[in-house]
Amino acid sequence: MRTRTVPRQGGTPLPEEHAVRDPGGRTEIGARVVERTAARAVCEVPGAGAVRSRAVRAKVSGDAVLLRLRIAVRYPRPVRETARRVRGHVRDRVERTTGKRVHHIDIEIVELVR
Image (cartoon, rainbow, N blue to C red; front, side, top):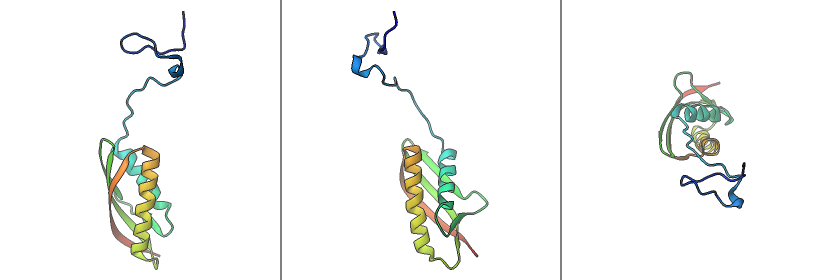
């Protein structure tokens, strides 16, 4: 006989209000996914862009993320203001996309572009 309940580990069924609940599992998000998400987010900020060679490095430990960004800023945009906007946007985008908490973002301005 088929039921709508999912058996627990011990074999006893869950109460009916939990019948459609996902039984769970583990989802792992690798550092490379975080890096690509951050790199795209940099390019979404007006006046900022990612550089060609390894623009983003991420260290992921559980739900914590540390990021290192190498970016270009469009001249004559204010560099510090652009870096502040990049930091905020990248943090929001990575946290919303991956569900992980961004604890720290280092930004290195390596280029001014016209």
